[in-house]
Amino acid sequence: MKKRTYCNPVGVSRFTGLLLISPFILGLAAFLVYPFVCSFLLGLTDYDGIRPPEFSGLENYRYMLKDRTFRKALGVTVKYALILVPLKLTVSLLTAMLLNAEIKGIGIFRTAFYIPSILGSNLAVVIMWQYLFTSKGLVNQLLSMAGAPPVSWYGDPDKAVYMIVLLRLWEFGSTMIIFLTALRDVPKELYDAAKVDGCGPVRGFFAITLPQLKSVIFINLVLQTIAAFQEFNAPYMITGGGPMKSTYTLGMLIYDEMFRYNEQGYANALSWVMFMVISAAVAVMYAVSALMRRDEE
Image (tube, rainbow, N blue to C red; front, side):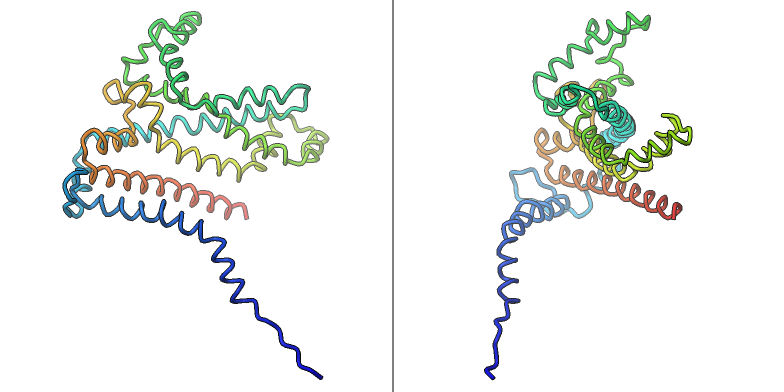
């Protein structure tokens, strides 16, 4: 009987797989890993973008500890994130619950609520937002109608950050869509069974909706926290960081050090500090989430 021979396709399969993913590997190396390493190395130098970089070790990080502008920008960024992220998650979830209703024409409302996220902080929106918060703008007119005194949004350091928060809160569409998709996956049988047991809407929200959305809430929390710590466009275009740097974020500080003062070594060091702060915040979130899951088990 003639012995059959089989071709071993393992080598071919490995080569084919590497060939197929090579564009991703090359793109990752060229546009992520290489800039990442270069940024770290430049953060260890004194570099103005013109003369060759001079190695200075950790001098940029030592200077950072004494830099009042850095401490101010870090404080503003943390304050901004602590205000915006909980508000955005709350508004997004409540709006998603309203838009989860099966009524005629609900798609029009879903589209309308999502449009601000598409517009973003473009020039037209920024101009509109600036006029809304002038001394005689719509916001102060509404406050006057409610019997409240007008607010000097551009002159009060304690109030200016809320202009940026409200703009980003207005752009809650992407977060809302994620919540809406998750809500549509919650089994309706759970709500039907709860109604039979006499469970009202409020209790059903805390006993059924929130537990079913825990993973989605966590994902949105992480994504929105990362986005908040990287904020640049809105304060740069609306307030320019003022008044008295009350809206001056880490992103704006990095931009100024890089392009206004040509301190590119220091700017790259600041970028790495931002990266470490975001990483630490996300790591804490994951640790807390893991502890909560362990307690539930």
